[in-house]
Length: 268
Image (cartoon, rainbow, N blue to C red):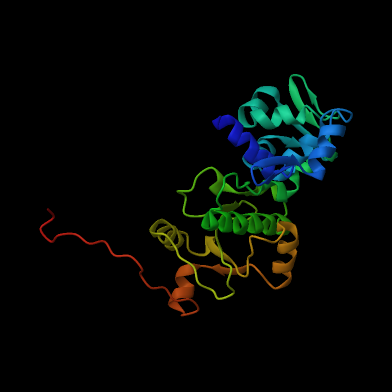
């Protein structure tokens, strides 16, 4: 029963079914997939799964370990593709222009669907929205796209927080020397106000001008991500604060401690 509940959540998430009181019914997209997907070799369902964000982590990892040719096609060894993106590899085989022999070969048209950064937003699968996490994911996605658009080589921009949340930053940009580390903060308000963890604070102090904070204000979880990104960048976001220590010393920013460690003087 637990597997059925998870499957239903996924179908709702990608817009194939909707819940009407205690009943499930297919949406227009669901009817289209049910009636046309077989005729198109499974491509419709594959595209919806890719666009939903459910396989965001696997998409990102596959793009990072693969070779992208001058024509935009992707090549990756079979074992490596299965190792980093097992379910995604199965979905890609639904496309007639994808071959899977000793290597996974994906044509440029399908790669463009994978590389469309909006498919990298992790999907929220569950009955309740994790507001803080989803807001953070949006901000990180926006900065990831912002850096890729500005970069000489977009492949050198890495969304590292997807694999390790202990680094003290979310994104690495290897187009700079030294490489730039970026911590992303997002808020529904325009006022610049954000929290840094102890680890983020220490890493910012250690890295100096190689560390920057991106602040995205006015973020709405109800707005479509591509549309909101265009809107926010048009308003001048992200606000970029590079070299946190110097900004604090010059009073461009101010910081106050919000937590205190309390112990007994005798150490017991």
